[in-house]
Length: 288
Image (cartoon, rainbow, N blue to C red; front, side):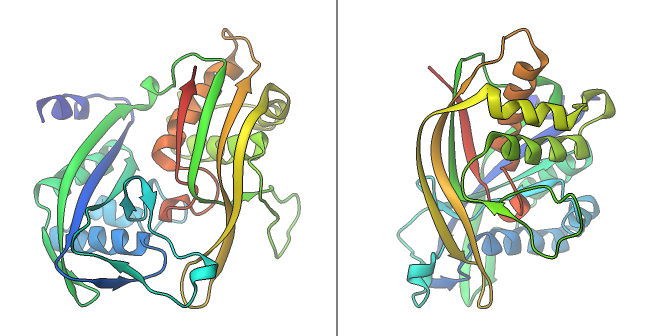
C-alpha cells in the first residue's frame, strides 16, 4: 500500500486498474451481459460512500473508466445469440472476478477509498453476493509502453465494435468485423487524446492511423464474428480475435513509440465503441 500512496503523490496523470473477486451463496440468474453486475456492485458502493468524482464519471458521455464483464478463468460471462433462450447463471462453487480501470488522480483516489471501504456483502438479483478486492495496478501515462518487439499479439475476448469514422451525418454507423489497424488505432488515439495531458497528445491523427494499414500487417489470426445479447431488446454484433501483427516501422520513429504506448493503453481501456461497459476487452503483449 505504501507504493500505491507514493504513486498518488506524483503530479503526472495516473491510470489505475483494480480487480475484484466475487462469490455467490446460491445459483443466481444475472443479466445476459454480465458487466451490468459489475457496474451495479460499483454503483451501490459509490452511493454508500458518496464518492462524487467517480460517481460523476459514470454519467459522462466520454467516460474516463472501463468496467469488465464477470470473468471465469480469463473468460467473460456473456450470452451469445445461439443461447438466447437460456439463462446466464452464477454458481456457488465458482470464483468470479471483474475489474474497473480509471484515468485521473481524483478517480484513482476514489477507487482507493472504494477498495478500503468496500461493502463486501451485497444483495442484488435476489441473491447475496460477496465481493472483495484482489489486485491493484497503478501507473503513469508517461510510463506506458510495451517492450520493443517486431511482433505484437492481440487477444480480444469480448466483441469489439470497430466503427468507421463518419464524414457526414449518417443515421447508422458502419462497423467492421475485422481488426483493421487504422480503426483499432483510431479508437485508441481518440480516447487517449480525450484524457491525456496536452503535452502527451498524439498529433496528426489521420496521418498516423492511415500509415498503420501499411506498417501493421497481419501475420496470423483466428477470428470469430459473434452476436451477444445485451438485454431483452438489444443484440450487438462484433468480433473476437487472436491476432499477431508485424510492426514494420523503425524503432526510432514516433510511429513505433505511439503504437507501443497505445497498445499498452488498450490493456486498461479496451478497443472500439462501448468499451466503458466491457466491449472490446483485450490483452496485448509484445510477441517474440
